[in-house]
Image (cartoon, rainbow, N blue to C red; front, side, top):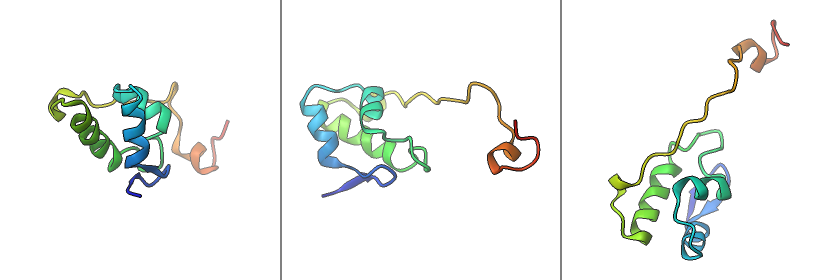
Length: 88
């Protein structure tokens, strides 16, 4: 078993199974497998996912767009995240 996403315990086999089932959209793979949604935010696993997707679909890695960044709906003060002053 080869782990791709350590944050969510996603393996190469998990990714290849979905691609073989017809899921070839990077965003859909991310949503289904939760890749890039852990503490590292995809720093390690997204490039690996893109390389697996390119290999399995015959696309060039450069032709697969990077995932969309999702920012908070409204800004949050660091103090609120840490549980300090200014918490609403």
